[in-house]
Amino acid sequence: MEGKKQHVVLFPFMGQGHITPFLLLAELIHEYYPDYTITLVNTPLNIRNLQSSLPPGSKINLKSLPFDASSHGLPPDTENTKAIPFHLFINLFRASETLEPAFERLIAGITEEDGIPPLCIIADNFFSWTLHIARKFGVFHSTFLTSGAYGSALLFSLWKYLPHRNAYSDEFSLPDFPEIRLHHTQLSNILVVADGGDAWSVLLRRLNELCTRSDAVLVNTVKEFEARGLSMLREQLQGPIFPVGPLLCTSASHSMGMDLSDWLDSQPSASVLYVSFGSQNTIRASQMLKLAMALEATSRPFIWVIRPPVGFDVRVQFKSEWLPEGFEDRMRGTKQGFIVHQWAPQVEILSHPSTGAFLSHCGWNSVLESLVHGVPIIGWPLSAEQFYNSKFLMEEVGVCVEAARGNRESSEVKKEEVERAIEIVMDNEEIRRKAKETARVLKSALKEEENNTNVGSSLRGLK
Ligand code: UDP
Image (cartoon, rainbow, N blue to C red; front, side, top):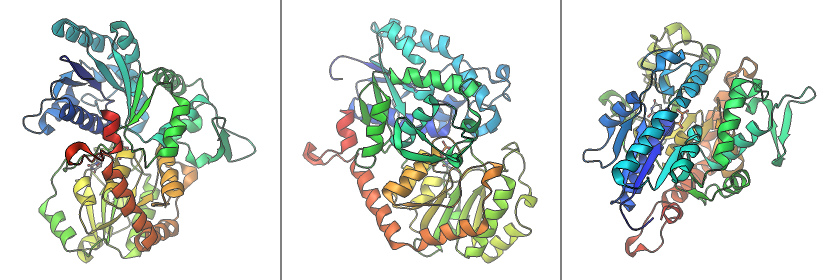
């Protein structure tokens, strides 16, 4: 990519777990190619939020495309999965496809202004329709997978072979991976009902098919961490694949309040359990009760990022009846638990020496943020590829124990199971050792030693 003035355009999907790694990729490209013009594109609200979070003096251009949420049955001012109830996700996907003409005009405008088309479009796999525009302007098209390789490979295959219902067994396998048996509880709500003809199946099969034709695929992972997942992904995609991770926030998106900071400082080393289900997922009210009971029963210190349960608007006032009677008061009184409503400074919490484990939905950013700090995981996957992230972390890496699985009525969780998983991970020296070793592997991928020797595997891919 050396030589004359060049322009790279990045286009993430409108979810926090997508926008953050795209921004980090933009910054990394800028670091290695300071002469390139780098433009990150999104909808107005996401761009406004990015503008306020970019470091001072950042050279990344931010461009917004017109977007009208309300004309797609979305509450006004909802342009990010973080603010949208799960059943409206399909509306956001449909609405996002209407960005195509505006994105094409943007590429045409850049081509006219620069005198040459952009060097490259780097798009989210949910925006793989950008391939048509890249082809029209003769631009190199790269897909950036913000999820891991193993989870992405399985998800590609799951959407390819539908449906997964089997009248005789709760298990099924995929033609691409005959050695893997998957259980029905390892399907998200959407995949359970997907039969090939429904709206989700039609949409995702088309997007995935376009994705397989991309000129190259970047993945937010590390070669030494996901060797098998990467080779599974190679079977699914045509273009060359480059692991470029771990692209992670190193500073907190929200600073830690004094109360939380003091509370964490007062806890013994590696004693605190951090509980969070990511930027958009929630659990059902009955699961919330069981989780609260399990946390209290362990008597271990915990931080829980809590949101209204499934079925309620994420922004409504939290009701104490969703927790066991007197729970919040008791946790405050005994100082056993620190409850944060809505959003916590996750990176700061995971990097604090008092944090000992993370009960997580296994979203890929959360996985990387935890493991890069050597914090083992208690898995509670809820949707999408989170089931396969958790499976990979348990079976291949040995840094995770599953406490529960899924969000469906049929996957009711038991208090004792959650309690047991917490006890295993908090007390198991081998799991902790493996998490520390994984941190070393992840960190070395982006390491550049002086005099350019021993360059990490992800940096070699980027260069
Ligand atoms: N996050 C955070 N505070 C919260 C919840 C989430 O900072 O209270 C951040 C988290 O650090 C991660 C992202 O939001 O970077 C969530 O991404 P992930 O891939 O883990 O899950 P998703 O939200 O996409 O399901």
